[in-house]
Length: 95
Image 1: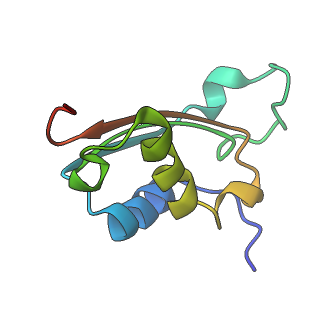
Image 2: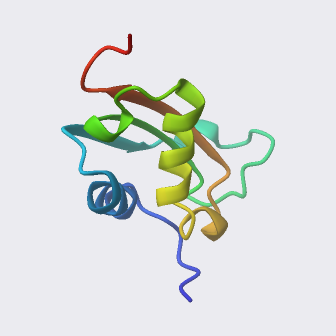
């Protein structure tokens, strides 16, 4: 099992494979959190933000969309991810 810090590219690759998104952006925001509580001092791999739009989110609540993202990332999260800001959008408006 790898204990190397997670990269934005790795996170994006896992999400693409699991959720087949129409659009995805993953940003490593670790440097913006230097000195904050919960920051390990690592130069990358602890704080991320992502925006993802996928058909698998159609008809799902906000919470269920987030659960799908966390389920897809379950193997990466224990490798030092402290914070993850998620914007998960369906490809069609929920009715």
